[in-house]
Image 1 (cartoon, rainbow, N blue to C red):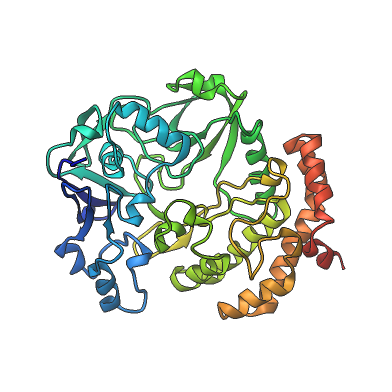
Image 2: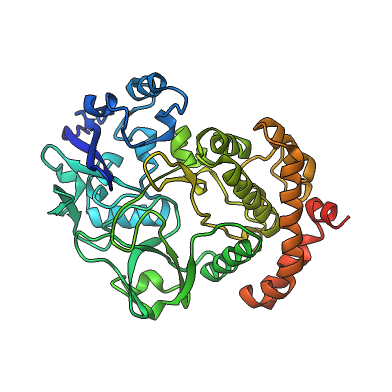
Length: 427
């Protein structure tokens, strides 16, 4: 079916410089979508970074070449180029968005048109031509000086991932969906009919990870009755929601740019599990982080936490980089830490780690091999691994049953003895 040609302007909301025009996304009548980088952005050596995939930390010429290249900036049949596709929701939230758009042939370009005023990070996408009818019912509002479409309906934002989630702001003891034109400072993760007790399990795992040194996004359990502005039927599968503070939003409503590792490598859909390995992520940290020593150690602690907690869903989109100030690139706080083995017996690591997906056989030697690969001292990494495991052995036997309940907490503790990493640390 023929599409209505349209053009979207892509901007970065830079705190110091104001909105920076990055380029345009154009859809043709056949549904092809192309991202063209603006000449002003291309020739600006002080440009804020949109994507590390188009950034060469060692060469300005290399950065310009990557920005100008077209091979990874094209989408076909209404699909967006991979980086922009990575901004959009999947699963239950995507289905809710499509239902609110109404009948019609909606593609990813339409969804981005509809939700471009409130995207992850500091990206703002606004129409530069007429709004296609296929974007569904919207109302124009002024955002950062631009006329941006805001959807009619519950979902006025985009968050990547398949779990049903919403944005909200603290309002005393309650959480309230932001008003028109505003952005939410926390993410509400709804309970699941497929995985009962998921918010409670994720909360417990995030707190256990924090105890062993992982920098986690602050989170808390909130009774579903304390949520205002979300239809009750969307929260009906449990008594609590998980509220996670957003690290890409400030209390003053400013936006901080972020991107996930899936966007950096162009992983779309299920390729977030297969397009790279854990070593790839650590090498990204080595190459891009402006405090690589601290961030490599943080990554090591997260991998250890995944192994100890049985988190089998730490895929590429669950590793993100944050750009807190000009010239700074850091690993973002950790999020989406879930003991998936509690829900999926026999679950394995999402990303291959030094040749294996099996939690049970991850050992010190594999971490030492990664250290050699990213050119850091293997003994330094091994010390961090053992110290992290030891903290879990010291703290979790008391904490896990309190945080997760007796049954789930004891399953986590009993599982530790099956792990090679734990046996080596104890020895």
